[in-house]
Length: 263
Image 1: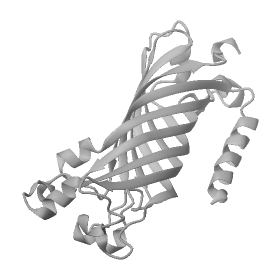
Image 2: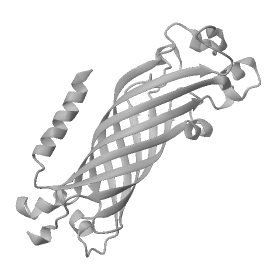
Image 3: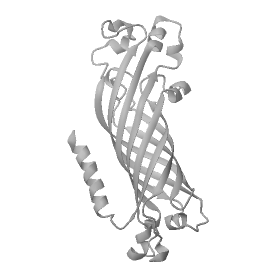
Image 4: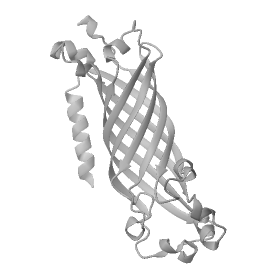
């Protein structure tokens, strides 16, 4: 359990040691996250957009544009890349069943509608961001480039905690109030857990001042687990792993702005 955390912190430590003369930014973000689980019907609009919660992130960015001339002035990749380390917190996400079966006016439909879940999650991750416009042109005070779109890819390790309740009563005293398939042996996996995930996304920065950017980011995160919601995939027909969509707006501050034009 400690090994993934150790690996992540070793990577971050090495990056920091090698980054003493590079450019650093810090950012803070807030937004909304839609978590896709075994709650609800796959492909149903209500399931995909109503099972959501607030998300908060803090991030550190390491960029290389102010070292490009010292390394290789012809290597433009350094002028487009940032390494981002991030803490991302997903607050109590409310999970409910939506779709055809939950809408049925039967006792089974009532059981589904009464079944409610929550998930809290803390992600620790490292991302690589590629900006379409050169960073030195975007960051330089007299730049005519106000927007800088980017693509991102990364790895995250998540700590999560889930819960389950029913509006029909205490399911731990009478499990029959849950839909039948959730009463089977090993159908539930409630409590805390840890999981790896991969993320891809896109976004853009908008330059507000010399040292401050407004940032919008959209990410897709895929988890290597189907137990984040507390419902075990092994006993269900639906064995798709969990995933989420995350949209956030935030600000990024340049800690030690310097332009390669002065080297």
